[in-house]
Amino acid sequence: MKFIKHAGKIFFTFLFFIIPFIIQAQHFERSVARYITDSAKIIALVDAKIIDGTGNPSKAHQSIIIINGRIAEVGNATNITLPKDAKVINCSGKTIIPGMVMLHEHLYYTMFMGQYFNLAEMPYSFPRMYLAGGATTIRTAGSIEPQTDLAIKEMISEGKLIGPDIDVTAPYIERKGWDIPSLNLIKDSAEAAATVKFWADKGCTSFKMYVHATREDLIAVVREAHKRKLKVTGHIGTLTYHEAAELGIDDLEHGFFVSSDFDKEKKVNENEFDRATKALLKLPVNSDEMKNLIRYLINKNVAVTSTLAVFAPYTNSEVVPGGGDSALLPEVAKMVTDRWKYYQHKDSDDIALYKKELVWEKQFFDAGGLLVCGTDPTGSGNILAGYGSRKEIELLVEGGFTVVQAIKIATLNGAKYLDRDRMIGSVTAGKNADLVLIDGDLEKDIRDIRKTEIIFKNGTGFNSKKIFDSVKGKVGLN
Ligand SMILES: [Zn+2]
Image (tube, rainbow, N blue to C red; front, side, top):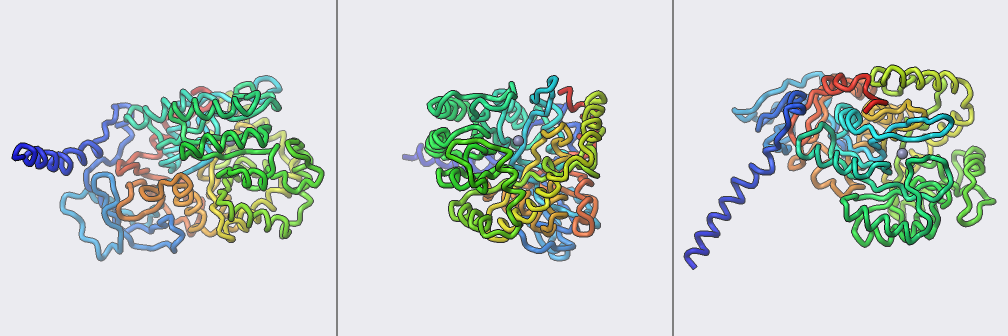
């Protein structure tokens, strides 16, 4: 008994002193460490404006104490006593938001081959750009090299690569339809179920239905994924939003842009994208039909992912929304610029639909729907990790959300969807110190979101500009 009692005491000591040390002492390879600005055990961020991610109004003159990678205290700068060993960072004139939790991300990039659309992995530049842009957690939304995505996730967690925490989505669940060679295709629903089992065992935590997947496929995928407490999202087309919600999907990608619910001629398992788009163009912006659909999605607990950057019209836009032109390999930059020029003033339908989309996303949010957001770095090659992520937030604000709402959509809402809001998604004592320090005031000018200075991930500060600079000219290469 004595021995056991003694052993218990040793174990107790181990728990309180050794384990916290093991959890906090993240090792970083030299190639990562050179981008770290702050790694002190205790950091005090003093006198910032905080937009905390919860949807509550911003507060000026706030301080945050970070201890061992966690937020230990947040409050009025005048009321907080700075620990004497703290590394103090003066944040006056600056804004702090939670690390972004972006949910429609990819570690690949558009790579045309002749007239065909294809995708190629960007395993080096994209994770860096996501973190530098302010995302500390991302969920990929469909993968083309799942084994690479899983390895990247692991290498980031081991301190070998720079990037956010990643929830990896398995290869697309898609049937033959579009000629995109890198997509995973299934022949039947049994294969859809097998895909879920295989990739869940490998560590994928989410699944994505694609445009031509059928009702039966979704039923099979939801059954297998939910059995494992994993989630299913979809950029759907063969299914209506109503159908997918009824069958148990957890999230719908691209706002309401790809809803085929209002195509009155649509038959079950039929895919008529053009007809669906025409129906959306015809649907009045304040229709009861859309309001009913929104109510149904909310009742069914279905989140909607806003991806405005990739749907925003080309006419009069930036060539690379968010200002990432210099990130592109020069040859790729030329191709992207040529495509941008080609589309100028040819997208009047897109402009019309985009305007309605902004209203529908707001209606969904205002009715209590879980609106989350993402970057979707695809399109004509103009949308990039990091740069496009910030653009998404700018577009939410331009579209009528308050800054506080837009930040909530990009932080706490994403964390809630991932069921990780206990630890991430807001500037709250006890949560991980995932924070973005911005040199400016977002409520004066949302474009200040481009002035990210330090990204804290679990309390380690990374130099945003230095990371962006490290991958200039790399997108399209690796
Ligand atoms: Zn996507």
